[in-house]
Image (cartoon, rainbow, N blue to C red; front, top):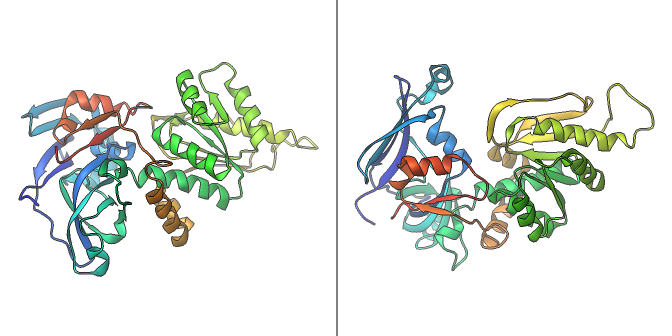
Length: 375
């Protein structure tokens, strides 16, 4: 290990200002059940951007400092300050997950067993050079797996697996997924093909349709097509899908999905009811690509639910045995089923460049950024 440890932090001050900066922090010392990981790769996920930018208006962002020690500042609208009051004045470490080499270990057998191994880690603050983590937060990667290959071992893989497990636990038999050409969407597609689960993929571009069909997807519908609602309804009729996962959030897509589910369910009704069908329809919203209001046009009866879907809450409901099996599957299939592809690799300093920020803040499908803290 070296004597330096740089960490990326996000701070909101009482004067309505967000500051992103790199800080020199102490080198961690592991306790008995911890390992120190030399972070070599950490992905930029949408959930990381929520911590990084919080409620700031990034159109106001300015850059100062030096090339190696940049500082980004942006205004936080006054109306949002009450919602972030618990983090005012605190330098929040950014980064949910990453991977690297265990370079020091505590005295426990579990910690010592990871010494020198390539491991993935989750738990926060991974946008730094070295981090100390409890062994329970680590996933030992198979020999030969690189840190880059294992950097996204938790958030997207476990979310995709949790979607399938939730479908089964709640008694549904097929899934609808929006923004389906994303890294997570591609993982979910591979899982469903392997596990024999029907999956309806919603995309918005023709090239995304082609991408997923080339991967073996059977059901792909394009939300920008004039026939979208008819195509979605036809796919629901064929698959019987009554559960959907939507990372977009705002707008009317959730409503469209519920309405199409209701049209499909109403085909089996023997008598008309002003309350609609008794087929329960569920949409989980797990992202906020559209931060606008969720618009529901109530044409789908009363047997429905719209809920948030957060990975850690979902894992808690699924139970320890299921989660252990998920983690093992991820480690076994991290270069196949759960492979992530990155279009950009940036250092910690480069991640605080205004041009780079403009790129990853778009959260564009098909573009994924990887931070390499050692570069």
